[in-house]
Length: 365
Ligand SMILES: C[S@@+](CC[C@H](N)C(=O)[O-])C[C@H]1O[C@@H](n2cnc3c(N)ncnc32)[C@H](O)[C@@H]1O
Image 1 (spheres, helix red, strand yellow):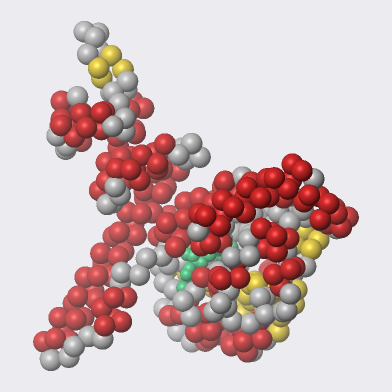
Image 2 (cartoon, helix red, strand yellow):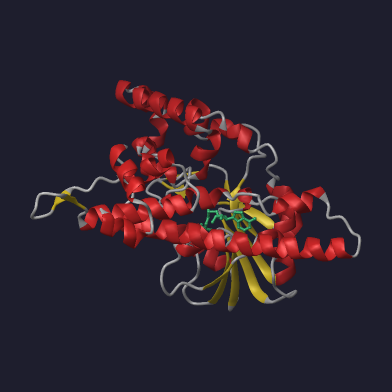
């Protein structure tokens, strides 16, 4: 224990405390019969200390390290992303403080909004590590996006995440504000810039095309972001959701019968008309295949059992955004209706369909 404490730079008391609360227990024995840390215990201790350094509380850490869905590699990825994010936010804070010092030196007071901006937390830094488990390229939808890119040679992918829809045969530059998402981009993926859609760090007309897939609803100012895409590219392709059509809540059984709270997430959602106006183009429906490979919210419309799976839900921000109570209620009701046959009864017509119109749209300009 003493040797481990020395190596890890913590006190023996701390290790005793972790042992007492069951967080990290030395599970091996020395030849003399003393308790000792196995390689697995050391790995766990390393995770605990890293989460501690990032500011997590011991209760949260226990949940994180005990999560059966997260293996050592997933922990390392998540930690790497969180650390990069901490480095980025520290850098942003230093820059903001420098700006404020300069302003104060000449008698200018920074606006209150400016002072708070650097603390704005990002959703994907909290939930992004669960993303790659079920989110991947759906080839039939990717083909539509890539076709809409036309003959563009240089492509900017805004809100790129792990890069699922980046065309393999063009010169791609990605933009992604979340360090956790950037850290999960596969080796060999396109160059990725840490920035947000609303303020793209590129010259006017720098790209042949700009694309955004399943991200506009996360932007603080979607219209400003779309205008930015228009500014930096000749062609703009956006895959998004249409909540403006009347009866949209009825369109999908999941929101209609189990998760009406979804409506609350769409309060400030711009209509496709507003979005197409911002880029100067038109919108066409994208039908979702029944066996859609990318696990976005609507993907499992004909495979309802999938929504009972925690892994499926954690990779979709809607479930985090509606809050744990609504999520639990929706899942419990769905589970009951699936076992009683009520879901099958109500959604009898779906079995015959291979694709569904659930409000997804491709905007092209
Ligand atoms: C649902 S994911 C989609 C990722 C990727 N486009 C895909 O289809 O796999 C949404 C992404 O938008 C990013 N995002 C959030 N706010 C953003 C902003 N203001 N500008 C650009 N991207 C943003 C998130 O960090 C996240 O990676």
